[in-house]
Length: 639
Image (cartoon, rainbow, N blue to C red; front, side, top):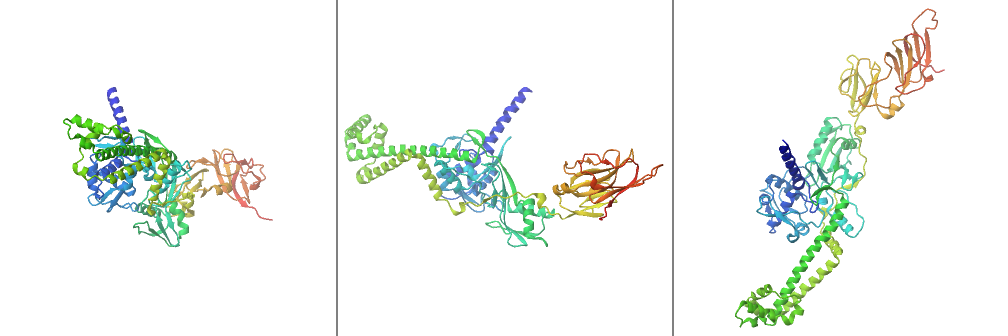
């Protein structure tokens, strides 16, 4: 049993670690999940400048991704629709309507130049074996820009999840440039669907945001939805409006979707409804306004880590400098090798060193003779001449020697030396070079890459306030049922399904409940009213009740302000029953006593205003020590 438990625990940990690191959570260094990384790696390998069938790309990627073609295809479509690294051709679906992409055999794609520029450099990228050991794939790309912020992303792993909102490409690069220059910066989300976003609770990549559709309400009888909130489609948005209309939250006569390249949903209002009346209801009861909770979780140094947008920008400010340094050092080495090779070649041909090997009989003699021939020119060469250098020189064909252009060779050498000087200068001023690299990327920003989402602050609509009170709450005295679906009986007042109702039963038990569709509250209900805070503060109940034990009358005045929803409370003490109840102040209590020997006064009156308003838990004041026959409230006549 213990062995089986150990196997289970070990296997579960391995599975959880695999799902977190290799499936669901993007890596900080390149901002990609493994399937996205493998798709781009496949596109780089296949790249010949032409479009490739998506089906072919999927097939090629299956060499690296062990989870089947369906997951690769769907991930490729999503990645292509980000429109940052993949150039697409054909029907890749519509992010506004939610329409799916065409089959992989009908659509084509290729890697954009930007992808290679910011991600691809095999010489400084670490590669690992693919799942079957037959191929090599990158562990992570060394990205020069924070792709994780531009793309955004979400994923659910074992025991954790991530939700990262996309940000504007130009603004992210500008923030990266500001960080390199030690200047302040601030980033807010930007969505491809446009709309509006409230970032008052956006905690630098965490917290939550409110997103809204953009509405055109210039026509008083219809609402045009021009931009939709992030995370919705025109179809889901229309469904939410239809559901709200069915529940009588808004009055709509027709909904039509005219969306093509931009969103346009026409909502025609029913008779008697106007745009200024239904806007709040659209935000409160439909997906025209939604809340998105965020969790910026990434894989950093092999471990899941919660970060902020600011931390990611600072991380990439360091990373871009490191990557550019590595690339410049590689180029410097390559330039030095070329300069060395071209210098040897020029001296070998111009000084006719090749003539000296004509009488040499052994290979070693040839090598020694060539190396000796370079001895007078070592100040110019600046590096030891190796046997590999000699082998390369000896392979130069006679035709090339005979057609050798001295001036052209010296021009090429001069260009190499100038480039070497530039590279060394960039290495010396690497931060300025990184800023210039970002500036080069910014110069390529197109109009389509400008901000689409408007950042504003708006008050969240309270559904209770936005709900229309268009339901008639009725009470049937004969059956004792109360609710807006009670068809018989007397209408009490109009409510919405979000209203709270105070109900006082004839037994003196009261409770605050949500407006019921149909609820038994007993026959002889004493009171029913809205449980609004303002109304409850102004509402004073005057209760006349009788003790069953003594028969004495008591008067209680109170307000009902504090409560727990759906909990029952006692308004009068046990062993008592209510005679009458009123909300009026300008009244008096008239009591009639049971006739008894030596009892001369059988009727008595008490002004209600003479008694204090106390807490709802307080007992009533005894009016007299006489057994009550009956009692009533009588309006006080003005003198």
